[in-house]
Image (tube, rainbow, N blue to C red; front, side):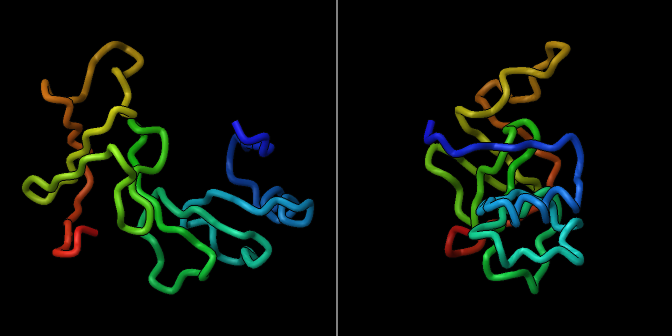
Length: 130
């Protein structure tokens, strides 16, 4: 939509990430487990997700959360994107969004009849809504 080039890799490749930065890439999306030893200072923003976010993370990182069934983040820095509903039921993150999958590959729909997805992830919503 914006003309920004996008490169995807079939698996994590430390050399490819570092090479992308030297070739002028300004944005990258990683999981926290890949951060050790990477120089992220060349990137304008680094999306982090897929696991617990480190407490002492680089200042140019953005904490994200989103299940596979969404194919990307739905919460950025603790705030849900517009149109995304979150609830916590017995400690489990429940998610409803028009961007959720319709059904899994073999036909089963994991959402409730009213569109909520039980993520299997533990979470909480604080008094300030994060």
